[in-house]
Length: 92
Image (cartoon, rainbow, N blue to C red):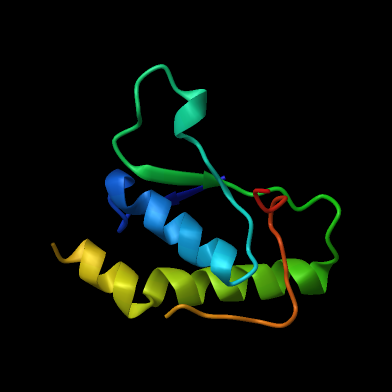
């Protein structure tokens, strides 16, 4: 699990969608709370991945979070990859 302190909870769907576009599957933590948490959080599922795949997924997620779309959302690229790395199963 990771807390994205610089991402507003309402912007998490956009971050998750851009991550999926980059081949990184994530799960928001909000469904596991009776009331939505005050900050954005994600669950990672990486038990079946190699260390290299995990590193690639984290790098791609970092690029997504630092992308101009996310920075604009934080203040008031779609990245594509031929190799898909999932920190959790991608939504189907």
